[in-house]
Length: 195
Ligand code: GRF
Image 1 (tube, helix red, strand yellow):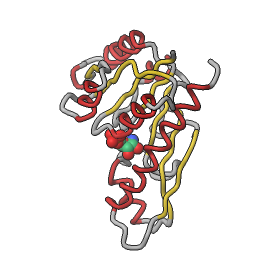
Image 2 (cartoon, rainbow, N blue to C red; image 1 turned 135 degrees about the horizontal axis):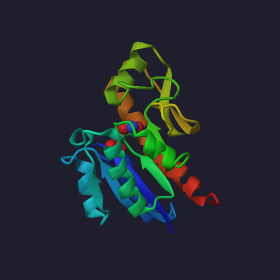
Image 3 (cartoon, helix red, strand yellow; image 1 turned 180 degrees about the horizontal axis):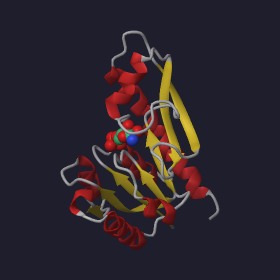
Image 4 (cartoon, rainbow, N blue to C red; image 1 turned 45 degrees about the vertical axis):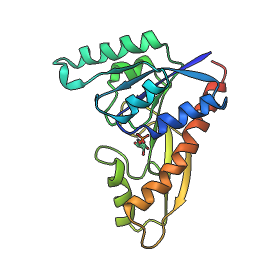
């Protein structure tokens, strides 16, 4: 059985889509742990409901960046991931961790990368920028994580139309629906690859 560790910072709809795909047998793996940077977030409730252990690792509690990375590495070595999924994780993964799991960390981002990427481009800020630039389409991207924000090789994208009179919230809903299909599909295809 292959293992997935998820990192998340908020509501957890992508986490839930992954759990659901596992329960339906579409992803042949299990989630061995959830890492978050905050404690009062809905994704933790989702993990608890599904019997998935979680740990909160708040970088503000460490004076040394290396210490922070080591705590993360310790949790990861316990949960032995074949794949690490950043499902709405808003912080940068420390380079020590990226290097230890090079090529095995994936992220979902709510734009058609390389557009609208990097620091500050998250949530409704992405969709507002799409509107401000009069884009006719947008979408979401799953990519491999490297040491630069939203930068690594693209694995898959899904597109949606932007309609006249759309608000950022309208686009967010449309893109989110695509994310919840795309992420489980990509995880499933990575899990099925021979190691
Ligand atoms: C998603 O839009 C994802 O693309 C981005 O953060 C959001 C997470 O939403 N990286 P959720 O917590 O999965 O509901």
